[in-house]
Length: 473
Ligand code: URP
Ligand code: ZN
Ligand code: ZN
Image (cartoon, rainbow, N blue to C red; front, side, top):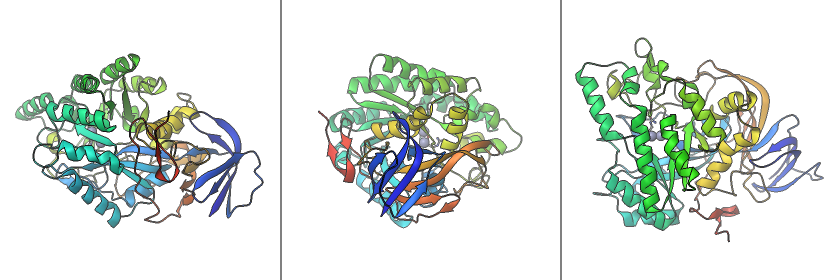
């Protein structure tokens, strides 16, 4: 099957030019002006952007958490992602404490087999237990299987939180195996003390979720992870950075040339702590972690995204239905399952408020949502760019298409939207995964099973077409 995308403005992290893209057998074959080729399908992209498919490195699909399971499976979650222009996601394969890593992966492969994805999927391994199930030896074997990132939680005491012993040993293993270490950086011990005190004082409302997780607890854990990764000698990636105090240790490390990277998520750019402070249980929708911060933090995050102190925008899509799942344990702030939805609207929001409003360039838009993710997580240059030989994961983006973001227009199973009622201009027109049309206009053309599991390369390696791995000189 061949596809010709004609006359679009092709934008990658580095380039911006008008031309044609010829796709043959799933990969980009030719790029140029007015290509003289015939194709099985021709897409007119005049007046549109042609960009690499977005990659979301932070999702929680069908994950058991907080006493319930996130409400998207790998079919509904990836359909929703595709409608937003995301063509690959990397989900957290969580080790249930006591399980081996092989068992954890087996359970996640079963999930993608039962509910097949429409876009490509990779896994990070979520390390929760090195004492009774997982071993460092087994962890060290995973990069050879294409699972090249280890994720640890420094928060959620009594659930998935790890101690510094586990964190540091995992970092040392990552340094040896070429994996990248990802951390949820908050001081879970200190937060536990503050939460218990607030509960004892009778505090109940969702706003106490923010009041019991001070920004300094995020900053402290971020700095601890940065220093420990330096000692261990591994690459560190800090997920969902929510505020300037946590940006600062990342900025300092990067100034020194350390291998430290940070992401923020769409919600931290737009939602502030006042969302938690609403009558009744409405605020429960916004109980995600780290919590929404004071509004003045948003300008700091935009600045960090613009200056490459933060290098990725992800979603942390962790959808629970409201009120039934959010209220499953009661409505007190400390028992609400933590997580918010957002897999579909990342590009809409970043394009409208970032590119259209002049905060970032179109190249930076591509870099933050696709190229940097591909480079950091072992997918580049197979994904994250439009170049001969790369997977034809491509979005034809209509910069004028108007959309009201809403639970009634998104495709996730979740029944609310963090950005409900926001009006944007700019949305995908056509979405292709490895040359196959998945979304065209408002229609789902792809089907479950069109997405594949992707094995990723290690730090310092490149992923080439057909999954070959190379080490650049
Ligand atoms: O509240 C959140 N973010 N839930 C998902 C788990 C995590 O911390 O990423
Ligand atoms: Zn987290
Ligand atoms: Zn998360």
